[in-house]
Image (cartoon, rainbow, N blue to C red):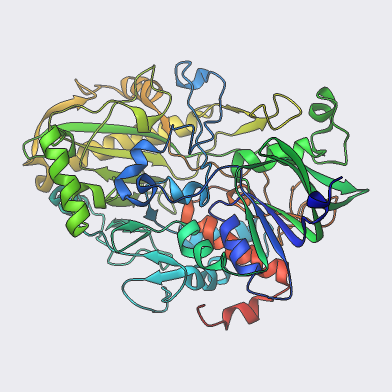
Length: 551
């Protein structure tokens, strides 16, 4: 091995510079006595499309920025298939997502703790949410100030978003001034991970300033092939970068932060996973962990949209209008190019006997249709007529899937196998959600803007009709989790400190560790997991973490 290769040695080697990986690299490198190497398969996050909030429509589904993981045909949604997205650049999903900041409910995290994830209740996670945050409204019991991740109010929301909140109130869903304290039951305007009208990804919030540290090395365009083991101990990573095969040695730990598809795939390529699957591709088994790649969960959603009598983003797509919006953004950081697509949200119950909300609603002052040939919602065609849309997703889907290898090397992407509506209970929930959305559109605050049905049209007259609509139009929300789940049971891939069971010197720190999907978008929680995981790696206790000043 060349001298250049031998020089690649650090205390901690992190694979994946995404939403959690950038956090871990930043926090670990705060200690000048340790050396940290971060490996990212994609490139930098400095494109104007990445920084401009509306640029996400050109990022998801773009092979330069998105892994575009393939999936099998899904018989539960009329044989359709989707591209499963994953950010392929520094910042990962936080660099290509819709910038909605939402944490999840108190019950979400308390459920994790009840499942055997000691230390992960809402009250135990809250200090790490606060430490990450630079909230525009200032520090409080629920929010942090001065942290790396900017969280702000929308700069220029569409007027229909407020009408959506009023319609929710008319249907008994209270308007929440702050939904970050554990109660999401109601409707609210979305907070955004933005600073001064620009996207604030973890690449910009955490990593940008940390890269000036002499003890941190960032290797972009480096694809990790496998974790290297000596016996049962992880001692490094093999990667390919600029057509050169390199080995990076880890004196203390290897941290895998490659996302819900990438992390289980790397573990399996490294010999940690279901033994039969590994042997099929000639991979030597280091530790048999049958659940690696299993337990895949995703928010399955369906969208309903209406023609409206006021201009929306759909109807402002003429070249001269786009030029005006662009100028407004450049000069004032206002207008459609400065705002998230999802501007208002609600968490609601489809049945009054439920203990907690079972659907999450997303209001968009635009609309698109999921047709049989659409494999990526971000690439769906939009009508040029004024329309508004409410998308509903199941908070805690019962349906499960898996990530499987298609080959032994990183040159072959893993395959997603998932029946989004494989459990009939999820269909029933979405049917109830569709009826709720129709009631919202029919409530006076929204009804006065509705000009006619668009999707579906005509409205289904029976539950069976709604179920058919759901199966034909269901889509993913880009919130995959669970494929390297943590827990205290023997089958869990990780223990509650995120260490991989059956080996040493190896952890997973990203959204794949979640044992159960949150009733919310997952990016804020992925950042929190990066903060929490960093403290586990550094050996900090919860009591000490709770007293830390925001850094």
